[in-house]
Length: 105
Image 1 (cartoon, rainbow, N blue to C red):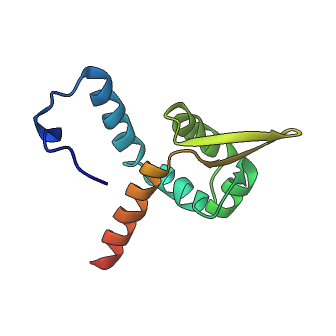
Image 2: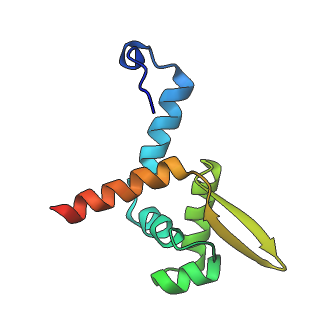
């Protein structure tokens, strides 16, 4: 991928600043990181996430709603269950690289 040589000279508009700050806010919470990390494996139901991460279902639902609003996760409905999966490979790549960096030290 070729980089724009003027990338760093461009002024950031308010919408871009907001999206970037919200993305980093999403990645700054340990519970959300754990949920996203679990979703590397593929889709999981809310109950499955709660069970595997030893969290309350209400906690998982709250965090997934936050992540869904940022379009970092998506869901599909099967009967009464919701199954969540990753919806933004760019952010997941950032998370993967950050975890690898942390494990490297």
